Length: 538
Ligand code: FAE
Image 1: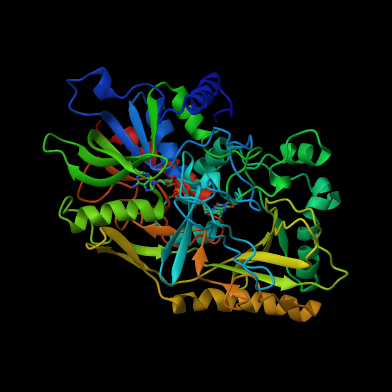
Image 2: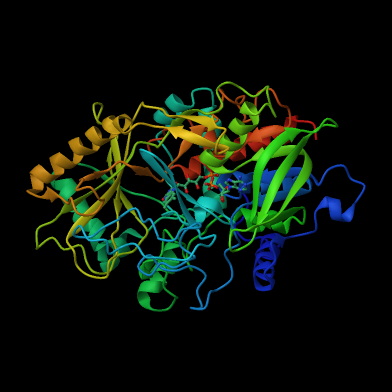
């Protein structure tokens, strides 16, 4: 198992900080074309995106001695703004919050039916994007680190039986014996100190929800996280700068969170073989007649203006642009005839991991506290309920005052799947997902929370998600699928029909995992990269 902070890893962190201080869009050594002008390829390997799957690919390629360029459409998040912070807090969003928006689009749109949550902002390559596709919106991270920059850090491992049901052709012994432990160690997954959890004001909200679950005969479990709980304790004690205890999460954490820029990507840069280029959006891929692939890449500036379009060649191409990004790149390539041999299954098998949010109003004596940590630490585990399996994360709602609200992100088992189609008019992929496909998720969540409400004589809140609804089923944080393992690719993420082209991210996962997905995305990428590096010609 690799220790968290090797000397090379520290070198990588230093490279990130230097690039940020100097405003570079390239981090690491110059790419091949500049050093060897005669080289046909810009780099032997290109990785698109810099989230979990991409970060694993970059590190493993770098360690194998393969010169690798990572292309990320977002920016590097290391430089403090005029307020001295890299990221804004959830309660005071600004241009850094969202990807080229004039107004923020937070998941919780309202409070007491009032539009008090969102703010007007100026367009900028901010860290959180909400990709709106009619009936379904998808939240994703943008920047070096992808979703790891904005997520809640929850790092559970799925039930083995459900994992095997979703990915029956993946060797579960190997995953649970080797790659899950490796992923957890590399990501820096840690557990909350139960004694501190029981005593701190910052998790009163979770204890109150736990009491209501237990009253109903339901089981709760602690959920591991990549936020450093020792740092959080120090925040509470006043000896470390506050982040999780200062309302920071969906627009980035200034401290405490082990996002992949701090773990995998720093280690990748530390190999000396990996370069990360930011504000670079890959828009097309075609085969190079001489072997390998040619990418069309657009550079943008901080105002979103296209400052250049280049063609870059590579021998091996690793797509880690996330479920939406990777699927769009491949679908466009297939439909425009650039990569005609790609599988018909590219674009299929998409799901939202059964995500539904809901909230309950508590009695006056059941306080949730004005002080709430933004990092969830507890879940209601009713997955064994055969008719309505639900794993519900007890979510914070840190508003700085007592509001008596218990909030949840329910992960349900939803057999519905969406698909993407290529829209030539806009040159983009459209997600086909109808609202009624959420019915199994809403029914399962309703079944669970109706029981909790009945037992505790409480009611749903209808004022938080817009449209007077008690269940927010119009957005997801967990896009999965689109290039499903074993369907659109072989059993290790090799794209069918085009040797040297690989998928390494959440688009491999067939729509549902039963728990939050990033540990699984990381572990699968580790497994697939080990096989690819051992077997495939370079
Ligand atoms: P991802 O992390 O999305 O990275 C893709 C990267 O590719 C991004 O940086 C994009 O900017 C970049 N990209 C896309 N298209 C292009 C292109 N054409 N050219 C260049 N770059 C491109 O991919 N999961 C958990 O397990 N636990 C949680 O607590 C949790 N909370 C979440 C909270 C929020 C608000 C959000 C948005 C997500 C949350 N997730 C959570 C989901 C998790 O972050 C997500 O599953 C992973 O980030 C997906 O990893 P990928 O490697 O698939």
